[in-house]
Image (cartoon, rainbow, N blue to C red; front, side, top):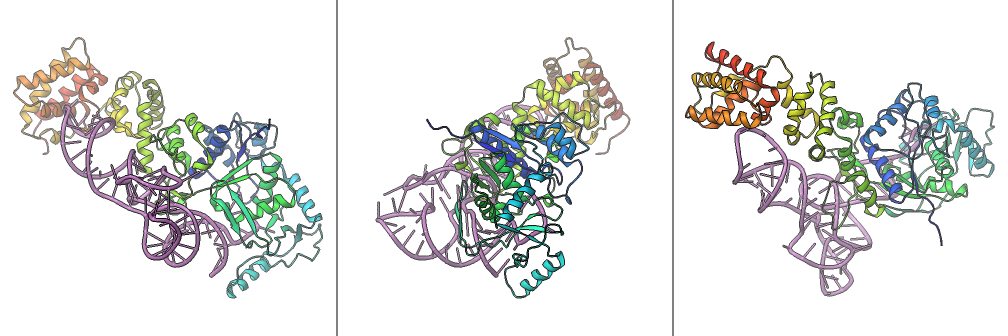
Length: 501
RNA sequence: GGCGCUAUCGUCUAAGGGUUAGGACGGAGCCCUCUCAAGGCUCAAAUACGGGUUCGAAUCCCGUUAGCGCUACCA
């Protein structure tokens, strides 16, 4: 029986800054595809651009991936990361048999391959200066020709000991076809690339060389990447061919778009994964949402909420869409709310505690525990909890007394409600939400008032706010003594003179 | 300019020749209700355009248009 080779995918971010939300989707798809087929997803650090390298970026990339719940099967070890990023504190290393998984630690291999390519006539050394290249481009633009390297050094035999780059020879008049797993077959009648650089003058490879060599060496079977790579795919195919290596399956993913229809980028605001974390989004919701941009479960499936495992079960490349998709904050928020509502109470409480503490709220565990069930369906993101629970953790609250005086309510009546309410609440044994409600309703009845306006007086007296979690549960969460205290305070304020209407 | 990719409600998408073109977000309305939510029900909202092929086209083909991407010793 024939055995399918193990499916191996890879996510290869460049450590040029923080992990972008678009990168999260690519990483997610890599993992979904590999794990759907019982294979492995690798993490590889593409740090070949020494100029754009940002110190600390590798460590933050790895931390972000871990936080969002994207775990790779192979990737840089602790030692490899530490060597590439001095800010790395350790503990997130992955390791694996195909390492190192950091490209700056594989330069010998790229050099070896580029020498082989030169020796076999597929590449050549070039010592053209940037100025010369720039001039060439200018002249081409003026003549309205396609721009690109002229091939000046093709036959010049530039010596190996002089500063140079290595360029790949693009064969003239060669048509090429890419059987893309998501786009279908893409055909180029002629290749517009003009002898692209493989090895830079600093000895580091360009993306093209490094990715082809590593994908081969690491036995990558499926390359998923953003479709901005499509135009250079012929080069990669040619490289595999020249090296007599079998090319992996390519799948070019549709772009994630900003609301202006352009590729999502920094210009669109908070697009780093870390900004979503700070904004109180749950990792599970982020992954679920990103999976749905460019992929869908298909016929017969009208659900939209999927756990990571469910996504892994369902994900196949033939369900990946061709057209780009806009990133909708509205839908992400809705989905995040769905996830918050599905959290076990203890879990929500735990996440809220961490978040509120970080936001500077002096959390009291008992109060938080009492209020959590009642704010769960009132949140889309974690920060939504702050205005809802703040009143519990403050010594002094501000009150908009004028807001009490609606629908026939006047100062005297409001003051009476606070006074009698304080007495009633103080007398409650046991002190619980049901008892508080009964007391409030009874008071309204005794005073011959509709319950709504009476509740409003209570609400503002106790919480200071017009919008709160359910009243009686809020009073219960605050506690008997503090609630009585706040009712009395309010009565005093109302007695002190007419409030600003 | 050249090369390539893409095109279904405002947005994410389903429907791979025959459906009243389905779902979700967002919007509107109603119900529930102590505020605000959540939840339930209902409504509005789409096949870019033009040609073919076919008994029949959102679906296949060709053009047009529009959007996007690439055109570096960046990835």
